[in-house]
Image (cartoon, rainbow, N blue to C red; front, side):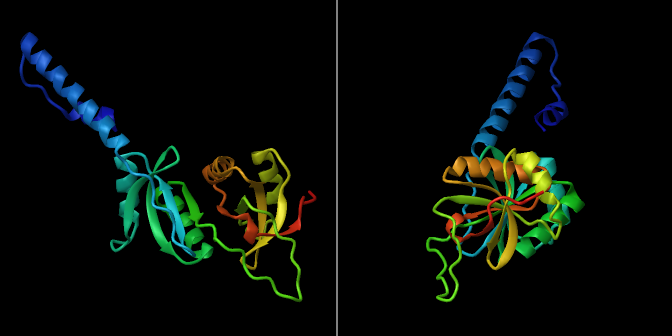
Length: 216
């Protein structure tokens, strides 16, 4: 992006003074571009019960490409998530809706997206007649396996570890990682999202463990 902008800048003056002025202009443009990149704010976290789509779009071209395929009324914001510049699209009330939009963005604009949600502060109340085996405090990265149980083998190779089978929000998921380290959880989420998997990061206290290891 920087190089394309520089190429469009024309320096009409000639000689040593003209070259010097041209060089200073390009140098100033480079500084302005760098400052603009560092001034991008961190992404606002999702509200309780909200699913947010974070579309990786580090360049103006990416952002324009995304804008062309989104409805005009869609509210977006440019922000920074970990080390990536992303376009934040919020307001999804279910993971199904967020997944549909992630697929649409990938197919229409060729851009990858991360689905994020806010971990709940309180574990869900447990029914007296049922005693589920809840995970402890921490973070779990879950993957919607889309009725493809063989996906567990693929995930095992990606994360280089065992894959669990869990229930979250009364829906089955494959669990790629369970950890108390937030950074490790985010790195796994990023790795899976980059490879096209529809993964979410959730409060592990809301996850019911059905099988600690999926038998391949």
